[in-house]
Image 1 (spheres, rainbow, N blue to C red):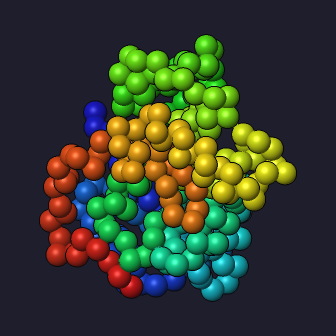
Image 2: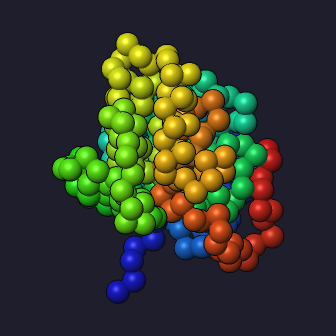
Image 3: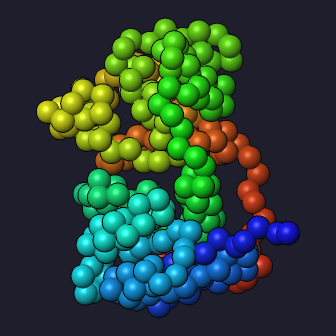
Length: 254
């Protein structure tokens, strides 16, 4: 028996954006439903089951941010990906702090969008990892019970704070973690604004875990937002997946 298709709720007041997403998603076997306002999205989530929501922040009515908060309360485990414009960094941070799982920037790549959807759904369907469970991503292995880290079997010496930063990011691999959230988790809420302090530690950490710290494959920067530990650190070296059969462009610029 084949697996059930992934159900995606597209929430955007612009018809062109919903169409640009709906066509390739449907061709790749996803099921889609659409809402043009937050109020409509909330009604759909109350009455139907979705695996993921793509939510525009700038909409009429109650708006995207209030919709995000209410969707998160309705469905705590359902991935919510925010659609936001390129230069709205404060919006991205606010959305992540309010419970968004990730964000997709307009103009967006259809290929990247689909990859982000699959990744978010996969994470949501994976049982939550215990904080003391071993973690292995690429060549990096962490044993929290021993507080040890190795790369390709070779031990890496980390300071306590370096270890705590890496542990938090690896536990949330694939997700954008805001500066404030990471600082609050490792140092405490009173340090949430000490971004330069965090950057210093991340630079040192990259020197220890990356082959080329100036071109990291594991510990990635989400510009002006925070950091992200790559779920699949060598994805950039892999060939592109097959393109959808439609005439949709690979990048959509509303």
